[in-house]
Image 1: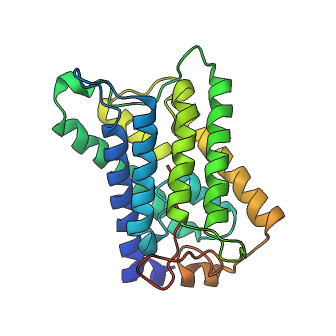
Image 2 (image 1 turned 90 degrees about the vertical axis):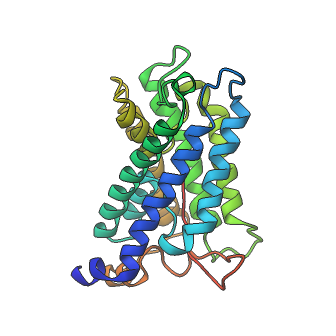
Image 3 (image 1 turned 60 degrees about the vertical axis):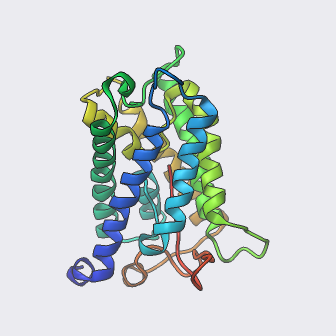
Length: 261
């Protein structure tokens, strides 16, 4: 355990999770600002979140696996794909990165366009129960897309996993924004809530829904559809994912990439 934490590769991976989440939150929230001259559209926001995830998956995925989402990290832990220690450090880095990204955006945006900094909230008379179900379904499809598109055991053409994951995030936003503003990622909800100090009574929805949805996807994929298991030493040695969960990089031979919203 001490060897893992003190390794340069581990420190780089944790920093990559921090940086990737910071950039993702900055661009995602930035697309939803309420500029007086041009209010954002649902399509604009959806594409911005999807493009941000795809870009970070391609850029920093080879360093850390590119989880960028506490729900995905915890799902991989449940699926026995990463060590507990790495999961703890990753989640901490993601949450701090989300706060930093939201904080930078808050400092740069004029007050007349800042609004509530796109803090997630239940909309359109949606009940908390309905909101949890929606977030669960949205994150479930995202997690399945991540696990499947990065599985090198597949014999069928996969294409670009980063693109597939980005489109999955875009799909979720096209539907989810109407219900909850679309989270699919506890860090994305936590960052602006901290910066704006706006924790609604329903903030728990944006943790429970994504975590349960991603966990269900991990159990289905790793234990039922395509069983795979690693020993503790293997999980530490390989860092993020087993060799069968590798994707072809555009610029390198093989690099592990796993992401989220």
